[in-house]
Length: 461
Image (cartoon, helix red, strand yellow):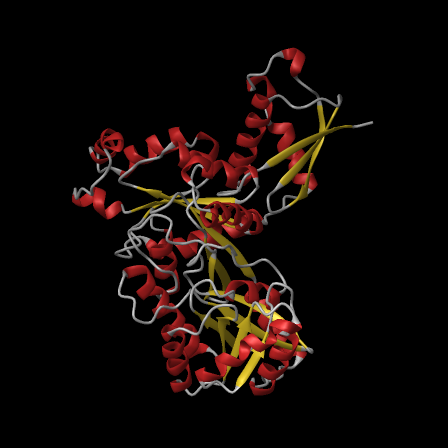
């Protein structure tokens, strides 16, 4: 792995802006609200031909005892322990404070090379503001403007000098590694507080994401790579998607936008449903995002242990009736039947009943991901498709005669998701019932478990 640089500092000093500047993309959410970043956020970068990784951490308040600030501090300590070098960021326009002094002492004690980025120094006239920060005792001090890129090149030049050079692998070995480890991007999606971060921690076997009972704890998309039997999975824990009217802070609005962006960049989605709440309208809307964007989907009914044990958790009065109804039959078949009715358009998605908290049922997730990944990239030869076409009884399709078309032949044009082209006698949009009938017939003959099927038609002439 390329060497790692950790970016640390107090809240709202510009760590995420510097992180985005170094990695060259808007990977981290940036705003004026303090404490936007919470989890560790990794990115890859290159400078002067050298490859390295960067980790952005949440704002550190060393003496804070509340749950989320304490978890942010723990995540930052993990990042510093992993790192080959540390960049401490301070606000050059603010006065030097006691927490800055304490944090600097903690970093110096680690024995890692530490560099001080005095941020928000946008002009030559403001460079004098950085002199006060020599009191922190960090020798490598650099006035920078993360927003405008000023001074960042000098900072990176100095950091590169202390980074270890990675071992050079032969092209033959590199090729083998890439061939053995094809990466599949899996987005973990759902509304707030359904257990997405707990699931990520369970799948990775680490405390990778901050878990708390506070809805909306995760803001940036947290990703982690898991290698199982030569297959690489990149799990992306996205922020809980909620209705527009329910998001008040700008950071929350941005996190919802980024969650949808990361979903569209993924190959597959794990849709997490809270078993104690049942399927809500918001769950159906989130599932619709994944379906319409062509992502393969696996539905995870999480907290199933609370259903089978009969344990109740405090809920609002508006949800009480639905939860009591969902708890009445602790029968998977009955629960899945109601779930399928609420998510009719995801009839192709497999359903797993799990408990991320206790790990029950989670061992089935990786094998199911491998199966769905293979189905997503399955290709059917044109000859086989046309033999299949001859066997279909189109009279069974509930479509008015005037809206039917004559199909001459059919071919699979693409994979991920599987896309089929029908060559017909007329260039008209296929009736919804016609498309659904064809899709069901294709699934019956060829499978395509867990992945949407796209069907398009063209006039033969």
